[in-house]
Length: 127
Image 1 (cartoon, rainbow, N blue to C red):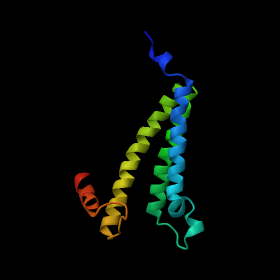
Image 2: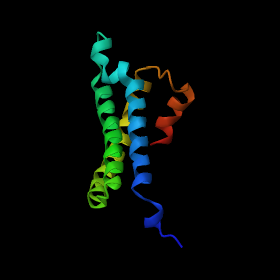
Image 3: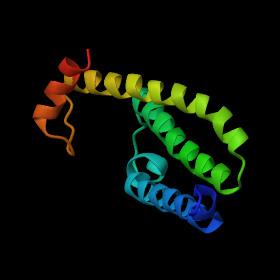
Image 4: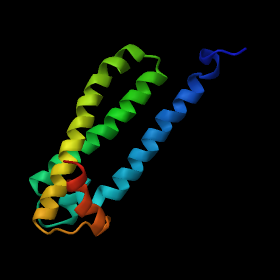
């Protein structure tokens, strides 16, 4: 009978690192004009709330790449310690996301990628 250590080898661990990097590249491409390279494409500055949102959510993706890389390198000791930061960052993402939606709803801003119903229901359902 094969044990878990024999089934999950270095090659399969690299899959997760590769997947994280590919998804990060897709996110960068999707948000390049509106966030990452905003100063090259727009004449106005981003609102501070959007800068905080972008920084926090980008930090999550960077943490994901770091965490998968640590596991692939068999450095689970560091991975576990960094996991505490991941929990704090996840909580911060919830707060920032909720704040973004509340500001958008209160200022009658549009969310082109979200339905109006989800914008109205989110603040009510999240406290």
